[in-house]
Image (cartoon, rainbow, N blue to C red; front, side, top):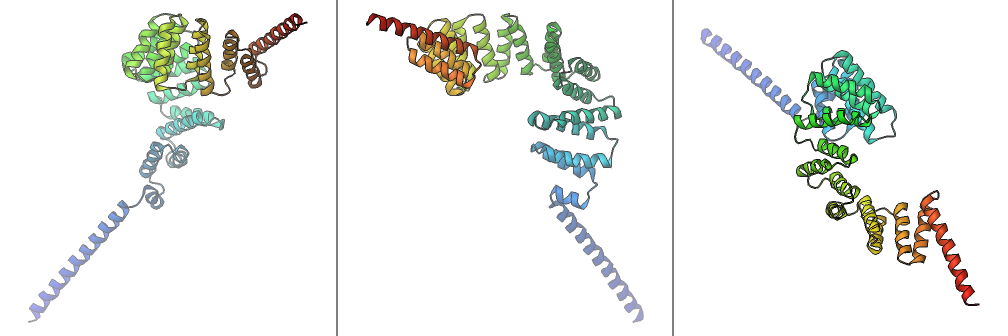
Length: 355
């Protein structure tokens, strides 16, 4: 009987242990389940130095455009791990992006440069860091220094289409056209879908009035048929080489996607002035003014059209309006003075005939 009781006690003790383990397991599962239901911020409040969680929140805020919030977490990550170059790189990138959007914070470009310098000091074999430093220097207008950085980046990783493109920008701004052309070609070799490189080649040849410009504008439009910048430049090129029919066709194509493009309407008016179709030109300038009500050049040009159409009163109104917007606008001042002189002379001659 005693043996039986002893076995019974052992059996009960074993059951108790199993129940305890089961309850502990259930508690762990419950806690894990609760943790999974927590937001990233709630998890960070429980583990404030968890770099993995901080990076997760940084990436989440970055994807939502909450750049200032990213910087807060990055500063904390840097305090935890001050030798991680990726933290400095990302901080620099974010400071630079904010500076492009918000020009009121003058210190941000300098902070972007400061942080990328720290990143490069820790790790000198990261192509992206040299590229970002080059881009910041390019924004500062330090083209020669930027070229040095872009070349270092390309030595580490040649297959960066945008870095070749940015290098081309630098040479273009230094008026080193041949090198800029080579860079834009290299950009396209690496990525034939890089539309900006085709646009840049178009603009370089456009400046030379070389019809190769159309070839590259068309290449860009094959990638994006609604690209406003390219449609405008293509029409403008035809205008510059005085192929007015194709220019008019080009501007009308532009208006399908950007009906209120003030420069497009203004240029179209200028073409019709050149063709001495003043009534159509006046309508074009009216469209430009409708797109931008303080377009003083458009008022002045429309005034010329009205003057040529014999509508002196409306011409006077437009010249005066141009001068109201820009009092030191010489062309409008001269046209207005000449119009008044002409009117006074006509009035004098008219009154003389009636005496």
